[in-house]
Image (cartoon, rainbow, N blue to C red; front, side, top):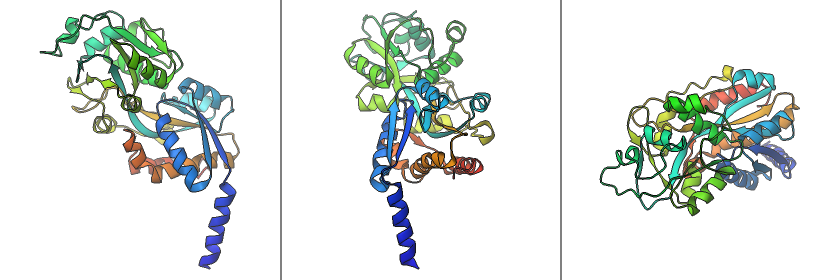
Length: 329
């Protein structure tokens, strides 16, 4: 009997080998999805072809039904998910770092300073709004160069959502979205593009997903949070921001983690989401779900190694129940 069970497992594994899952979207989780894909392929023979094209492109491609799944850091509201007949669930929590190119370690940026810089009103690094939070630090009179995304981006959505909550003037003049009408700055494509610019431009400042800041050895600022404390992006401060999250499957897990209360909460945290077409054949969606179920079971350490926060077991259980209710699990 044991031998027969082993044969069935072998046959099912060989049936999966050579299968390809096609996904596209957010650059925010790309470092993690790439690693998960490598380990999953080694174990199962199934390949994940993930195009890191930005959240806007990911939403567009799944709406057009040209990929097996889309990925977005900007969650779709339940009404939008229903309109396009999409399912949605989170995979991990991360954060957007404010990175800078100056010979200064541990720069502290107040909410006032960040709003002024990205509105184009604070133009020099030795501006009083910056020096006030950095006593004893000799700030240069160098001009500030803002570097931001040029493509439709979930990272932009998280960052501008934070700015809209923290800064009334930003909310009134610019607002938030995957793409906005920036008051200032140089545009770059993808987290990769912003990180590359930041490495080259002295006096530059920009926002990138934290894993890209670490990978590119960029300096990251301590950011003032809603409680008035200066906190650095880290697994601990992302977890603190996510503590009060209400992951409701009836709302397709829609949740925004920016500007949360908490003395250690990082103010520019966010989750990243997977979008699946409900009108696809069930087996097409099941191959996607098998990958993310494997990631939930075996991928937490890889996530932490890359500075993402795995979802709690209770949330993963809710997601599996959601999958089951849709016939994908």
